[in-house]
Image (cartoon, rainbow, N blue to C red):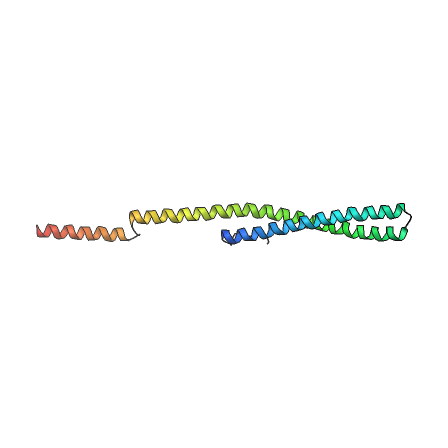
Length: 140
C-alpha cells in the first residue's frame, strides 16, 4: 500500500512523503489550469453562439467537455493524494517519535552500561573480590 512507511527509516520516509506532497501540488496545478481553460472555452462557446456560428460553438463545447473531464479527473486525483498525504503525515510523525524513543532507549542503555558495567561482568568482579579477600584471610 502507498501509505505503508513503517519499514522505512525516518529520512527515507520523509523523502517518500515529500514526493507525495509534490505530486499533490502538481495535481492541484493541473486541476487549476484545466478549470481556467474550461472557463475560457465556455466563454468561446457562448461567444460563438451569440454570433450565430454553430460550427465554432460545437468545437468550443467539445473542447470544454474535454477540459471538464480533465478537471474532474485531476480533482479526483487531487483528493486521493490529499487523503494519502494526510495519512502519510500522521505516520511520519509516529515514525519520528519511534525513532526518538529508540534513540533515547539506546542512550539510556549506554548510560546504564557505563554505570553498572556489561552484564555478567559484575558477577565476575564479585568473585574476584571474594577470592582476593579469601587470600588475604589465609595470609593473615
